[in-house]
Length: 294
Ligand code: GUN
Image 1 (cartoon, rainbow, N blue to C red):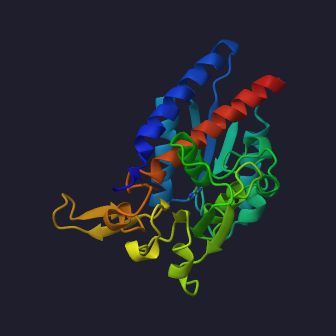
Image 2 (image 1 turned 30 degrees about the vertical axis):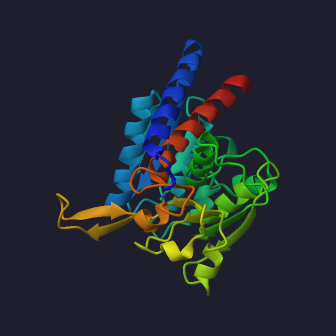
């Protein structure tokens, strides 16, 4: 029997409704959870991402304050902007859209977002705390994957083998930090797409998380029966039957792997929609925590 399809859109809608309720609870106390974002430069992909975040905030009832700085803005100017946002009590979450222009030191910038407002989980303290199992925000993609596994009952991963094909700071590393926490207890292998005998690695996976941006990278022969397969790939492939002549697919051969999997995320509509939703969730959590300490 084909595996369960993990519907990220449906889960996202459910979570967003819960967030709207939590925002209502804060309202009588004069608190409107607010997410501030800074975009530097004119990269169209980044601009569209920021618009998506702003729209999602508005739909759920958060306040969004997106600031746009020119590509040639100085590092000092950006740091000052962030310092101002972090100091404001009416701003609960702060993010800087990446990538930044080459003349700006990303490390310095990310360290400017205080951990309690670091809803992207990129501050080095947030990263360290997440590995130690201490309270911190973690990047939205792995946060969304964990939430998805929990809400669909696929979160019993103790001593199961999780194989992650991605080693970056947005997906692979924070995913490994979450899966190795004491309360989860998975055994984790982190790989690159060109790791020798990658198929030998992925075939061991009880949970497989892939984000390599290569269509069809994971074939049915590369997974074992009963795998939980999470696809965070994003690839546009030619498709003459589609209206625009192309369509979005992930990294996993969805139709073939679905037949062997216990559960699988589609692309689009799987892990992707959870990412922005978790950024909103982190902002609501930040506002709730601030309201308790006010
Ligand atoms: N650029 C690509 N993904 C992300 C993300 O999750 N957060 C930020 N701030 N920038 C990104």
